[in-house]
Image (cartoon, rainbow, N blue to C red; front, side, top):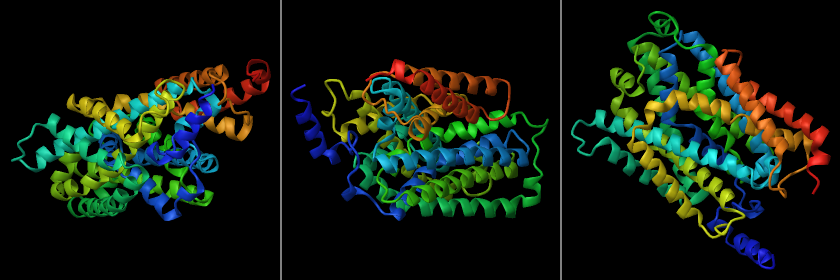
Length: 432
């Protein structure tokens, strides 16, 4: 215990080396609203959004697909704004915010899930992009598996440099995504006609329910919205977070997923790469995708490294592993998964995440706005774990029964359980 103040002081003095994983972001490091928005927008703009939109759009009537996309992303925007505002006020990362509800050690469970989720999305996007390289350039000599490893190594270059690296790449990626989206909309209208697109119904009818489709859209980005505090803790004003996070979600998620739905309806293809190639956009998609992917996956690497810091805190490794090394380890794990073809698991994984992750923002929101008795000084808050389990079960039951929107049910049930249990049992179970 005698060395504890020295350890904290050492980590604080080298905060930039650890990306302020163990402390509040100081005022001197806070960024303006434009920088926060660009980083958030750059993060939400990803090739996986086109892929998810195309996959869902090929399985549903156009109007149903658009409605499920809109509802799912409005829910995600609410999560991003709420958690972002809490992060602005506390200056803490997602992983350390979860300590306030779960407790210091129990929050490691959540951090493990965050790290695994990040590895999954990095791998899925690198696998998709590597296949795009192979289909766009027939002369490409390197196998897809090895190409995926090289792509992830590129993305890691900005992630290991922290927020400064994320911001630089985002200023390049956002314009590229806008260009690609506009080009897809124009190509769809010219080659297929907007009337034919909006009237699209799959042969044999829809094969995906509204609940499953909405869960897919939410599952595809609930992880991303949950880790928005990693960026929003650098904001100077709450308004920068509220406006920036909402607009970033609707632009980067809804806009790009809608584009994917339209492309699927226009080409009758369920593969985005093949669909855009059919529209004559293969080369444009490739060059724009370079930065669209980079701005997202470096954020995922960054967020996973912060989650790992939370896991190591309290162990012998706490405060001894620099951000750069952890970012490299996350990238290496994703490269291994990508080499096995991560894309084939896309819909099952996104639906699972739509059940497992939404309870967490429910816990953070419930603690910050209603309970207001932080458990960060306790190892485990069993009331939070029970509430998490209840929300997960409720979300899974809703998904299986095709009832309403599983993610919303999971989050709301978690908030209710956590607030009620805390009011009834907090004083007797969590005496400090």
